[in-house]
Image (cartoon, rainbow, N blue to C red; front, side, top):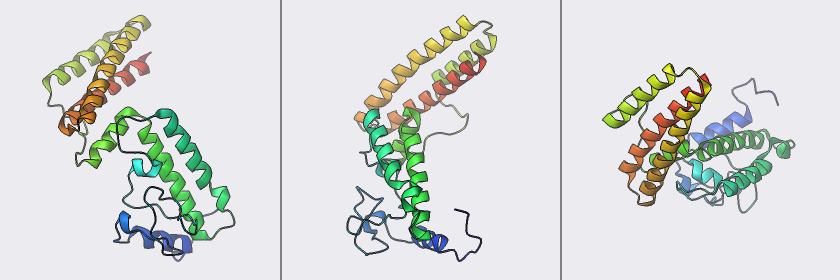
Length: 218
């Protein structure tokens, strides 16, 4: 469907209305029947079954309907994602109101983004940390001397590697370090030791960046 040319588009109006609301996610009500929306299933109204606009405060775990945890059953996550995409597909709302079609597009996009986050261990860890008030480190700033040394030494090794076997060896070593760091991250999250989880997440970020550099050169 082509986008509305007018600022008075009903879909845009509805979207603005819900996304500028000061209602918390826990007090959201269905736009059609005014019944409270169950946050365990925030995509549709449990009463009238109407599709709902995305909750402005919903996190990736809520959007996929799973508990916020680093431990994720990947098969269950994928199954949940596919089921939601089927329920939210725009084709199912081809005869619905412009507002509902806009909600369908927005909900499908939000579920897509949430799945892309939760299926990857690093992005999942960062999302979990944000739920606990910790903003993961960004950029190239490194305060851990051991991590800084590892990053510099590995970068030099990648730059100096001239054969595929050399790169494969570096990749194997990096994946061993990834497994160790992921185990430490899993343990920290299990203990709810969020500062330790944040440190492990930073280490994991640099390990993945190293692997990307290796794979780019292979």
